[in-house]
Image (cartoon, rainbow, N blue to C red; front, top):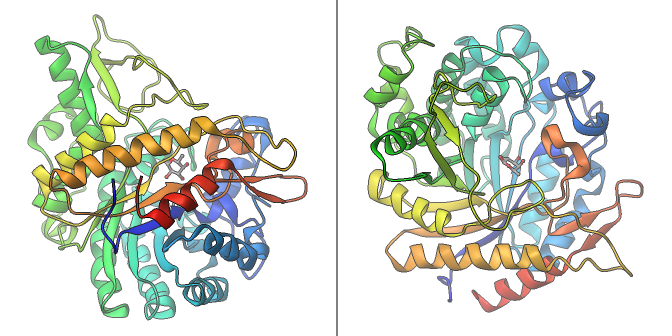
Length: 438
Ligand code: FCB
């Protein structure tokens, strides 16, 4: 299973999850600093204050990437560092010096606290502030970044951050204004990036998922339609078809009136993109609830839908291991929204790794990655214009509400010393890259 010669072999990270140095270089507080300081929000009271100390160790980390043979690296630019982007300037130069393409995400969830205090993503003005930010970052790095992603997983920002409040800023309310303002922010950022960074690709990274009904009974099929609407189509349709899906608008009548959508917004949101990034971890298996349930689900369905465990093995997150979900999702994105170049912008697994005699024997992660790369190759062979794959993640890191307890890295991080130890999976991935496939 050999991939195309110019395939981008990458790994991904995000600013708050790895950088630390939250009070250095002129960085201002973000919603994640505030959220993590609130008792009970993050497992073990962890915060991103030091994270993996990447801010100070980026040069060594780039050497590590080079030793694995990565041809692309996906990182995010912290909006709270907008006043001084020198760190990213140095990072991008170090990557280019090692022949690694810089792939930059403008928003991986770390909203400046001052923007949240102005209403955050519930306020339409935030979309315009974001476009300004895109122009500033584009002006600084636009001559060197190979590909941009405006947003990472706006579903999480809206539904987890503003809907059920398990992510920063921890609000529990109607998530749909945030959905729309995030999409508007994306749409406004696209022309800002195009003018600041001509010649670079512009896209977005979505947590697309394959949603399957637990049986083929009509009620279960309808439950899958609802969740597919709220996970996938609510983003893909406005981006690629210029309209919110009619069934989603009807389904959500009890929660929102969509009055925040203004004339012209959908034309802005559907600005043509060069590529789409998909982050995939596990499929969803859903069915109709016999009676309305309140299971704390992030999907506002009025309790009509229940999530079922996917049979089979799971990761340390309890997430099902099912590579067919990745294959099906890549095929679906191409069929329904393509043709368009696609990148797997995140894929990976957490396991409870330990260092023994200087090594980490993470055979389960190798299996996970091998299975998902094989599924990606199947999609490629079936005609998906798959251009690259980014393992999540380069390093163990701050896994949001789970703190440091969940390890997704190809490289182990000792949080007492910040020592990096490439796991067996990193060495395996290096060999895959050298071979150009499996
Ligand atoms: C995704 C996030 C990423 C990481 C992985 C495990 O939803 O984009 O930051 O937390 O999940």
